[in-house]
Amino acid sequence: MTTWLINLGGLLLMALIVWWFWLSGRGPAKRAGDAPLDIVVDNGVYEPSVIQARAGQPLTLRFLRRDPSPCAEQVIFHELGVSEFLDTGKATTVTLTPQRPGEYRFTCQMQMYQGTLIVND
Ligand SMILES: [Cu+2]
Image (tube, rainbow, N blue to C red):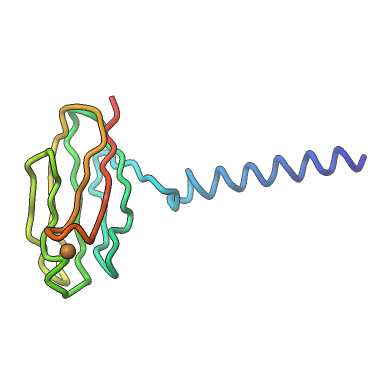
């Protein structure tokens, strides 16, 4: 009886972890589908900083810059040839279509802000 209860507790804990990471949207990587994905630029981090996308499908990102320091004013997708200036307090939309699977870095011009775009097949 006790073992059964412990197993049940373990299952509930696993379900909670799964919910937390995949369903609540608080996991380390967020998948951007057709809908624009908001990325907050503040305190030296992109939130979320890891984005998932699919090769050959357009990806729309909305950068919401809250950090007024010049460091945050530009976002650069290295290897993709995409860069954009961000206005403070206003959303800047960046649309890109990554063609090949892989990991692409995106940073500010001084590379203090760091993000990763993971492109899946
Ligand atoms: Cu910077």
